[in-house]
Image 1 (cartoon, one colour):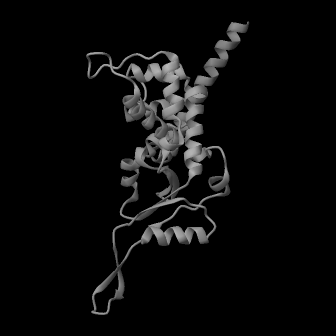
Image 2 (cartoon, rainbow, N blue to C red; image 1 turned 90 degrees about the horizontal axis):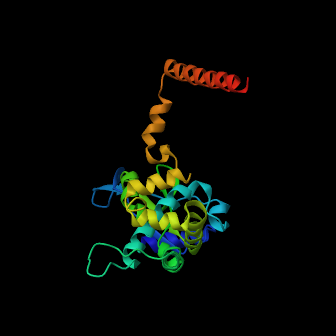
Image 3 (cartoon, rainbow, N blue to C red; image 1 turned 180 degrees about the vertical axis):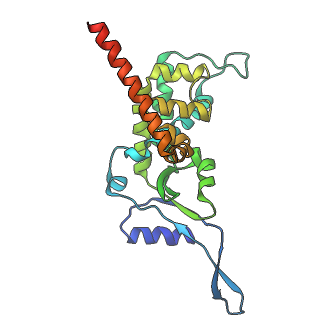
Length: 247
């Protein structure tokens, strides 16, 4: 009932949504009383506010690319584990595929719309995020008792599938992607997915560790000045070396 009511409200507000996943927050006490004098409780649910680009754009909006990269990495590993055949007589060792074989898996199984079913926007700490199964555990920790709504549509599946192709073929490279995965150096763990997404500029170190940004902002003026002086000294030393080389 909650989902149906929310979906109706969103359609009436002009936001085209194909799926609504409502997560009810923890009940909060109120000053109101029920018919028998019992204290009533309220539930808060936050829905994402979508921009025109969110609703109608073809490409993945810049602000969701870090989430998208990590979602793609998760599903790439999951799909390759399922689709890459094992060596004969081995339950653990995977057969090393030829290029046309792993490219076929990328095209027919990884970068497909159906792979990214169930993804949509969710508000986390007052910021919209692309959310779904790949990031569910991490995102659930950020809700902090408040309710949330994940609003999905076919456009997010299309964008993720398109970004998947760009990431594998244009950013990382299909050969590097497969051999990195096969050798256990890429996409096998959350840490490896983060490393790849940061290396290819989908994410930043601050995305991975939000506390780092907070720590940096709390540096004293004295520390910041010392940092600036060191950077200036390094720059001057480099200029001196360059002048000596050109002399």
